[in-house]
Length: 274
Image (cartoon, rainbow, N blue to C red; front, side, top):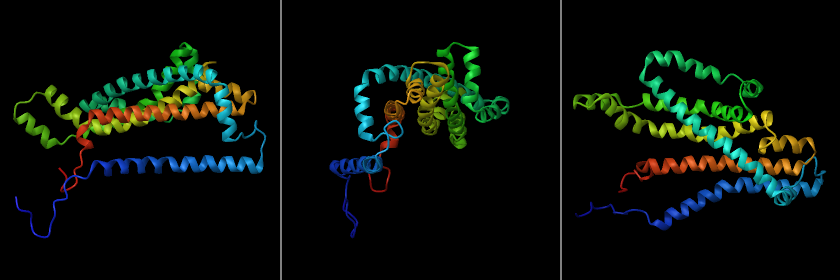
């Protein structure tokens, strides 16, 4: 086909350009943390505070390497609590979201209480959970409770945002309610649901740490409590750094699942791109 005068067919952007864009995005995301760590290290050299008050990043890194076996021992427990609590929140949250979106009565009965549950400080609820169930169960419950809210809210919004014209068209063609739910409502709700899942993955780490501080002598949360009480401040900072890495890893795992489940969102939809 002859191109329209005055226009050019640029074609798809080269693969190298996409690689450069991704490298630039990663560099921009890591620049600020590196600058903050550098400023922290320089300040430690200048001010020279005592290590038990504020250790430098170099001291934290050295201490973390020296006690790496101890950190790994506690990190495994925290990761286990986080994954189980997050999984439980996803399963229960999706079921609640589907029930609320499908039934107006269920929505009026459950949705307000889901919102009210977020006004209760989980730190205050943690001692009660320890009294009601074993320590492991209390920690998993805390991780699940704190990550349940974004799953329910995102799931309900996604299921309710389905195009009503599309639903009516499917019903006109004879599609059953079950088919519409599995082939129309659920796929259209996935983008918003994954937004809630990314938040829930990070919140689950917080819930696990709260549970460990209250109900356990194992896990990174318990380690921060014990090490801070013994003035092992570099160990405390190393544990906090690993907790941050666990949160980032959980977020990235959900993002990769979204990338795999929603391939159409990866396509370039700008005009002129095919």
